[in-house]
Length: 89
Image 1 (tube, rainbow, N blue to C red):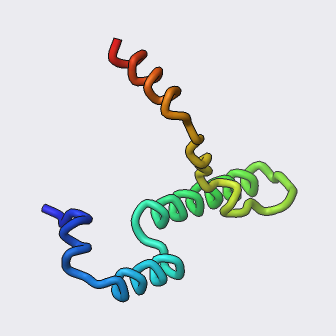
Image 2 (cartoon, rainbow, N blue to C red):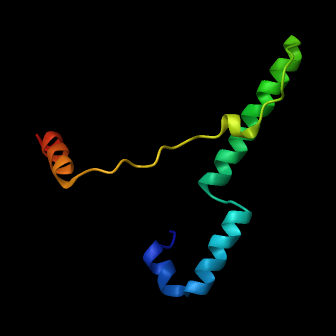
């Protein structure tokens, strides 16, 4: 079984955590790395298909295939309460 975030933070200090954050910005791992891999794969497939059908144009960029997530919207406390009431019936 893996280590929880609380357990991990209890074992390392802020300096080591900062080093891991810096490392992840240079060499992404986890979900971000997986998204990059799949974007590269999708781009490669598109380029192969374009070549097979003789399509011209600019080559695909990895950014064209990266997932994009909108930042969470700010909600008022009243709005959150109303949504919870709607969910709970």
